[in-house]
Image (tube, rainbow, N blue to C red):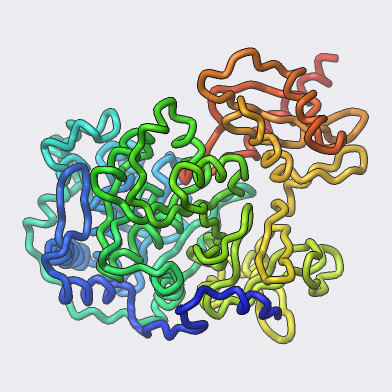
Length: 560
């Protein structure tokens, strides 16, 4: 274990924190007792106090228990960001049950797998997603759907800013066996029993992306979730004066932990958006005087590609965070010139229910994961020998930390494969290739399985993408390995032109790349596109492009 990062620790922040031995639900209970009239959520013009938020949580928790929900039972949440998501999450925990967040982009087969795998009998669902979950009632996979219309919790004057199709959303027509309207569950005024869950009870069953095989459920007891919440709160640090822009989806760890749970712990105010809209986000930052904006790199790219970016008022921001992919230096510099702020990048996984590494404002590094957080033991091992490596030696990042999952739900084989023993301790294998420098800062090179082997040369797509972002007319780029009959693989780039760019050509970009990087790294082909494929969490789905290129190669061989 290296403690080099402790020399870079932010001033005034303790090197160790004691995480309370309590359930996550008690964070809201404590904050509501301390700040009952403080605004917890702002949602399209509507303001919800901590006292009102807890009151709704209690009623929904009571309704859940009235349906027969028992301690340790699993409950699905299939919604976009809305106050009902927050209420539902804390109600499930208050009822001593387990939250199973669902990507709203999932459809029948994926939903059936999650319901079957978790054994959940109840789901909380947005009314616009009802058609996807309803078939699980007659099939016997679910017994009850609690249905929410987001517009019900927006202010009348703010509904026009809701995403298209949601402004006039209503639950008036929601009737039928197994269906309950959100308002009816609240009006039933059920009271929950005594809160029994402890730090060791399972709190969140978070499914990994499932890029290979079926998604796997990461088991996180309350103590894991609390480790990240309190880590964020101390390291950033948060106070009850902060106003956050909560736009990252709550089904994803960063949105859940940074956009919802940490503000609730500290008594901060969260300005919520159901979906990303760069112009609305910029307007909210100026109007609500947002202080913290934790985002992903693709959102910041979109924000700065706006034609009227220079007119945005971002002066209230004191912290801008990014993750999901390395922040291109050219983009970070433009944001720095506009706001005076460094983009603070971090690193985490579903298997760690949020961050394990963060940069801090006192000594941030560019295109860097940051330093390990409280009590995080992060190391780098050789891919072949599994021997621990030293500074500046790339290998697989492995992690031992209080936020690491206890294992995969009902999947002992996958759990065993996910861990390795070092010095008698159990470490999670991240599947990410990285290194740490002499100061203890970690850097990612790429995913283990994303490396391109072009005629024997190893090419790391993230490095090529970062370099391509320096091109003045490229808004985004995704680099993959495409099959090549002679070289095995060749480098291909999918390029989104910047707004207003003219005269871009494949030959011109390839020539530019040859001026910027070694020839073996340069894309051999460029494909222009209006947008890159993304997951529900906003991450670029490079595997989709890789699969498409492989299918294209097969078709070419068959026709030739």
